[in-house]
Image (cartoon, rainbow, N blue to C red; front, side):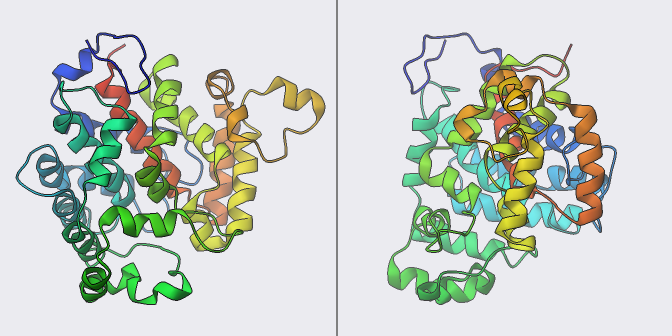
Length: 334
């Protein structure tokens, strides 16, 4: 029996008896197997130099880092770096960097916040608030293992550019910045037109997008891979994707969200002729997500691949939501 941080009534979660590392690995596999997730690698399509099997290899390679995250043998930052190194070694490229950035604190929260399995926003927030400068240094080292598409740092933080890797360690130590502090900079960009780093926002806000998508997935029916695809559309419609903004600009990222939003089941919006406009995140409920047009999403997937639009950060959030859903009892069995 568990009670989440919102005070909801206790429920029995069969998933809490399972190995959290196994659930995290399964979440990585389910995320890439979900289809269609427009613009992303899935079991039906590859993207540029990324192949479906690369993600399977990345999930296997990341396991040692996930195991460290679920133990007290390493800090959060060290577990993340180990996961990224293993992923890169087995996949040969960057497949799930962002997924691991979200999964590692969720795993640590799973095992660090008694009773075991009582995983909610408060638990993961305590983990991120407990990170250190050494965690930040390890996070920067992780960028030396793979190429990650990121936007440049603010003008007053050039010495904190993550692409500097270990060379940024002196600046991190001089400023006394923890890993959460570093991500807070990306979560709140100084340019109001710039799309924030959604993964960084999760770290500093208590994973609100993740936990919202968890409820979409748990209340949905059918194969978990289909539920993941529908949750992906809801997440993309709610927030412009960070990776798309970094590679194509903020305007393209916002347009991609509008296109995803048009596939949700929003009768009022369609009746009023505003289905082709940006969707307020608060307007996206479970019914809108569960009624998403997956046939239309197939067409959008083809268009996004042709245009090189890859909402990778939205895939990261989907993976995190799948992990929590598994911990709360979601099953792959029919």
